[in-house]
Image 1 (cartoon, helix red, strand yellow):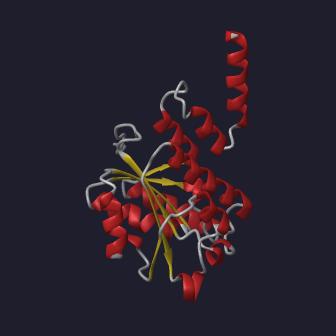
Image 2: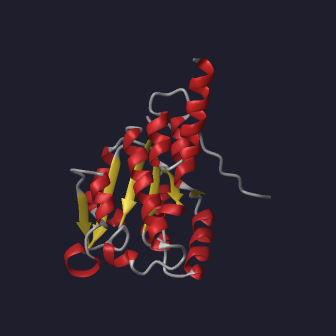
Length: 206
């Protein structure tokens, strides 16, 4: 029998975003899809989450000695954001990161990271073991070859982590296209067609 995992919907009140190790050095090794596309997806996810008022936790690994800082477009998208630099492979194993996640007060955690099968997957799987509901935005989580991507996705599914794309998760949280935040969220997700639909609707109502 298929094990169906269908949690309650994400909302702006129950969800938080955790971005793990989107660092310059790691980004240069991405091979499962174009680096420019990955950057675009990560920045869009971060901006949409911010527009929706989600708590955001960000972390890097050994930025000064190993993988370098978070890529500039991400730090520009989140001005004033504290990137917790650590040495642990699993971000959750750093007490500061765990404390920051728990301090959000949210039980639904959306993870994205480089690499998918380690930086995103390990804390997401730990979150499930700790009683949270975990999601991974796979289009904001690149890795170093197709085998790593395929096996990472399998392991996430086997561990009870919900796998989705970042835009779908943000739209689920938006929930209502009549929200005053809708235009900003769709814009950050680069859904230009949504702006067109809104303009057509406004013209029809005029």
